[in-house]
Structures are given as C-alpha cells and as structure tokens.
Length: 359
Image (cartoon, rainbow, N blue to C red; front, side):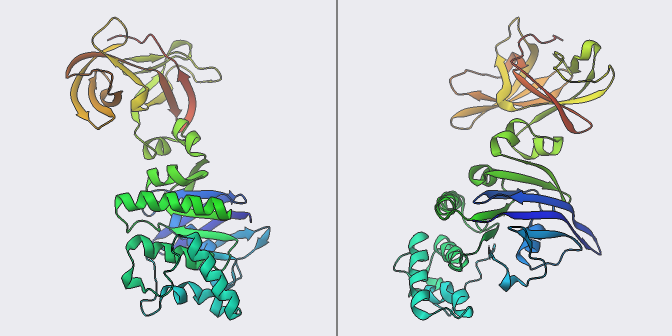
C-alpha cells in the first residue's frame, strides 16, 4: 500500500485555469473520490497524477517521492478510463497481459498473474473470449483487471461506470469496492455522481472551478457541508435568506433560530440557513410551528416528497415518512436541525429546535 500526496497543482490553458491550487493527501489503502460538476478540474487532476497532463505548478508524490518527471508508463500508477479501450482483435488474456508483456515478464509469471486477476474480478475462464463477446460490465471488469495486473501502488479511475445502465452501475461499484478493500490498493475515483461517491468513498473531495471546496467522509460531508455550494451539490438542501437579530438569534423568513454557542455575529449580518428536507417536521395545522400550505405530495416509494409554500421563505421541499399522513392543504412546519452560513461558509449548527416564530 502507498500514500499519494498532491500539492498545490496548477494547470492553465489559453481559455483559463483547469485547476488553480489543488492539494490532497490520499492515505494507504484509502478510496478517495473527486466529485464535482463537469469542468471543475477533477479529471485534469487525475490525469496529472497519471502523467497524461503536465502541470504548470505543484507536485505529485507517492510515498514521499516526486513522480512528475516520470512518463506514464514508468509511474507506479494505473488508470481505468471512462472508455474501456480494450483491443478488439485481442482476447481477454492478451488484453490483460499486455502491460506485463511490455515489462518483459516471464511467460509463466504472466499466465499466473492473469489467471489470478481474472479470478479476482469475477471472470475466471474468460481468457479466450474477445471484447465483442462480452457485456459492458464484463468489459469493465477486464479493464479493471488490466490495471490491477501490473500491481500499481495507486489506482486511478476516471468515471469508469458512466457508460453502464443504472442497475449495472450499482452492481459494478459494489464489486469495485469489494475488490479495492480486498487488495488494499490506494485509489482515486473521479465522478460527477454524488450517489456513486457517497456509496464507495472513504473520503470525498468536492471540487468547483478548479479548487477543492471540502474534503470529508461521506457522513460528515452530508451532515456539515462547509460551503453553500457543497450543501446544494450533495443531496437536497433548502436555503432561506436571513439575518442576525438581537442576542445573536437568526431570523430567516418566518423562522427564528436560537443563538448558537460560539457564533460571534452582530445584528444585521446576512445569514443563509440550510435545512435538509428530512430535517423538517410537518403536521396538520397546530399551535406549534409556522403556518404554511402543502401544494404537492409525490409518492416516491418509501417516502413522500412534499412541496410546501412557506410565508416569507417561498417553496421548500420536505421528505416525509410514508407512515406520516400528509395531504394538500394547510399545515404547520418547523425545522429540527439548521445549518447556517455567513459569507458562504458554514458558521454554525442549531439542532432539536422546537418553538419557532409564527407569521
């Protein structure tokens, strides 16, 4: 197992910066996902590590040694691309063995290594088949086997499942996670799919405009997104503009949030509160909470997606358990947990809220 260090990477093209100042440490045996929208710099970062793009600044180290001067074929890395790039005229055995043959490994060693890695990816006995005879998922396994057979210290994966259908993507990422854990290889996985990142990563680095906005575990990223961008990119988040009132309480629309320990704002400061849809309590019109109006209820299987018009706050989204009856019409609503942001950065968390201001 190995440690990857990415330090202050910069890459600029005539049209602008692809990556501005990217730093990231990936620990031994860890799976880290680079997550972000198209054009945010995640694939550029991965290709710099793999040696396919030369950066304008910064460094990449594996186990403390810089690899920037090494060509891709001499780096202790292997990449699985979005397109499988299997050679159609070669059978599975020779597709997988290609890297070892370039390294002039003995024939018996190659046969043993190929058989072992095909067993690992769940394709024993497929050596004589050609890529055209394989399904998309099987081709992806062959591409993964070809990367693993050379025993890289760092495995790089560039949206490897984007060409697969939804159900196969789920199965393949489960299999990848199992293989990665079994081998214990340090891995960096690029994706724009938040569900994919949340399901497979030990930690996620969320990128925007060539910068990393936050690096955290999936649980931490969802529970305490450090910026408003991360809050809206990961899952669904209701954002309501507000400001600081007397005694450091926060007034956002009809909601008054009690002061949070450690916050040093002053009355009049602008604040944005964020509430996850599952963190709202919604009931029939009652003495508690803020009076509002349910305008739509959508059945999504194990829960309801409820659209609510809230005075001074606009439309918000609530996730309600199927056991909780919700219907179109008047309701009362209040948040149980609130994140609040000052100048786009997380400034505090208020939890277990009971009484709210009323309109």
